[in-house]
Image 1 (tube, one colour):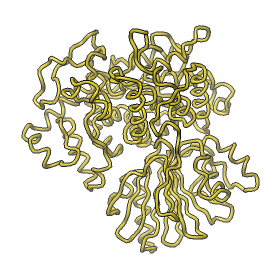
Image 2 (spheres, one colour):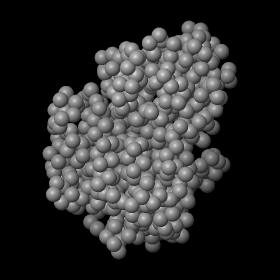
Image 3 (spheres, helix red, strand yellow):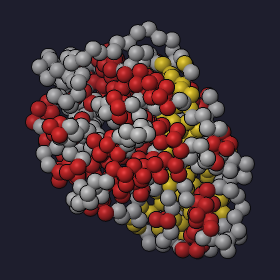
Image 4 (cartoon, one colour):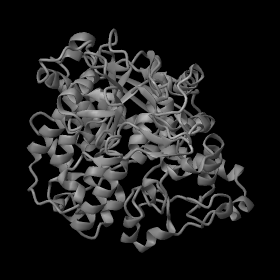
Length: 589
């Protein structure tokens, strides 16, 4: 991932302004440590911090058309760039960068080319011929993007909030799947798939069609000119990513450059469920496996850095981001610049454990649609910013446009969780890869119960965070929470602790408004909390809050904590992994 910053139509085109834009752009240097670029045209500035994945030698940005009248700064990867180049045979390309096609597509098609891009992207395009500009963000919002307005009438675009929050009077999230045209002066949704309307699909389930769509999504993400690997937690989604990558790596351009030996990476507390499962999958697939350990104290010590980089105070996002943040640093230290990850599957297939309580297929499908639309504020934000903090790129094949179209066209009756028929969560995905002749994974891994990442790294991680917050947030502070933080008032001491840190870094009201809120159980939307009356008394984003579903669920009869917002004890329905003393962030390969 790269970092982009654009200031358009400012009242000051002086050298001092250029220096200020460069200063702000350097706040994004962690996203792109390989090169920096800035193009100024009158009162417009386009800056770029590059992470070189494709064409490291010549693909520096900003990028241009033939006569440099069109300038573009891009964060992302265009997986079909070779196919698009073949359609632009009359155009002369300056670099081998996959993103250069954007400038030429604009010359050829005007503003109506965005849907032709197959990939993840955020870009700002400046047409100096009429002084117009175009801004666009990918379909689901895998790449982050913020839009701000200055008092001088300027418009600001940045990959992260920290690039513009100090210089804008107001800023907000740039909506995924949209473009903004200065000619029209408004947003337009360019991404219009059938599922977006939330109408109920009726296509019969075909496991081979689903399997082929996912394999295609993984294969196209093997496009790289740098070393890469896969994130492997040992859960279903990351294990399938690893299995498909391992099966199809040979014969690709990446294999010719870097060999056919796939590297996999996992993080967890010593003895955590993920470490054990990931080790087993890695042995089965024959990957070179790298296992990182961290302690609860390591994670707590990193919380401030995590919140600064992730730019949220959402509890479950911070819980899950911290181990990923620590792991990403170690991965980058090994010389790896790109990883393939498993985000998005739970939203598409109803994989979170609260989906067991979906009353009917209509509610089930509606919730999956709501979850996908909100991904840019949760898992996409985490996966992108936690890795980009260390100059590492994460690619997510489950959020491939074509794969989503296939998966979301399936009649949701097939996705419904029906234990009496042997259908657990994500059964349609598991069944698609249940191949008796050429198994992708061991059966017990293929049918392993869902663990949220923040749980799977070790149950004592979340318990440790709650205990730490208990020590730093008093009952008296909680009594005044509604007056101190009237928007998205924290209801737990853990949430209050994160909010205090966030407000130190991002004190603007626009920053507070950029973070979603509302009741949630086991990562549900507020609407799905209505599915079970018991949940309203146990609002916690952990998967263990899915009472009666998770095998290590919270005890609904346990005494409540001093926060009065959930149980203080946990009942164990199977032996629980416990944390043991571990060296700080050791690595086993």
